[in-house]
Image 1 (cartoon, protein in one colour):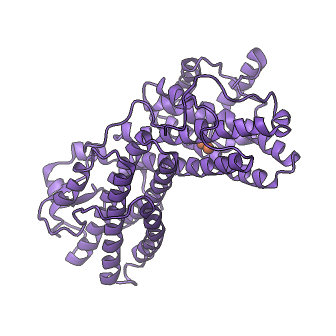
Image 2: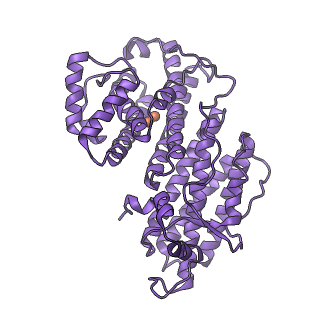
Image 3: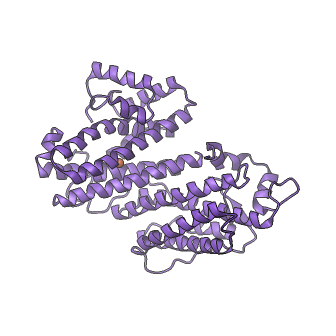
Length: 440
Ligand SMILES: [Fe+2]
Ligand SMILES: [Fe+2]
């Protein structure tokens, strides 16, 4: 059983919790009415809470840095790390739900929280990697000590979860160490400091860049680099396919990572589940970027052979709140791309490109999840009001100077899998008749 969304609504809980509730969280002493009677159980529960604190704040910092850093390799590394943090957070958060918690705020020592306060101004990619590597190493050691002290039978669900996290942390550390050679001194999660702080969602984070960073080998241009007229045309010309793969690599996949990273840090009041969904998408887009770069390089091209336009980032910036941003990116643009991607996949298959046909099937499955995420959170933010959903989608289309129609013929099954209301799909189908298919 998963915790419901309100269980991870830290921002509102921090704002409304009374001082008694906060004191109980901070000192975590079993008291008369407490459901928990042993200090030992509380100790382990608080350790899980501190891992959640660490991972959540790390994920927010990584999201800021993913936008501002220049190297695409480093953006991909951060994207993969954000995905890992989210998987750990998801498992530990569920475990907190199972540990007799009605609601909670992630806690850590004040000394540990200063690691973040001291790192908000880091900009250099190697220094950021050093910092993240030290945090991961410290988490690894703390998990090791939890596993040594824990009762592997009584606490088996946590024991297995932490054993898996520890194992995956090893490969995360290896990747980070390729960017960092020395140590970055930090205060440990096991700090003996008496002063404890709770995550509230209003902690300082690194500056959110107005425009995503790019390395100097990439030049900006508004002009489109794509020259093919149809997918058949694309498959018959390597130069056109190189242009297309470069465009998807930088202007679609990397840009989607940046857009979702901004959603995590600009809307910190959103519940944990929202951040986990955005993190899941960032991780997927990082893999898609790797796949498209692999295709580009296989065709003899490389990053920087063409310009980038930041079209996806700029369109999303036209949304004035998180609902509109989700409508523009996940529901409208990715919703439409889902249908055209099926045709692209078929074109790869017709061109006997088995490798890309297989990869596209995986990408399409991920993309359906992204659209579903967008639709789910739009409905959540609009209290399930279908008229408000329709109005928001219409506004999203007009904000990016588009009509509310699809790129190609509607695929009802794909639209249903990805959570579109049937009435909305009917409207797009009608609009297709009036306006014709939308030019992407
Ligand atoms: Fe993607
Ligand atoms: Fe996507």
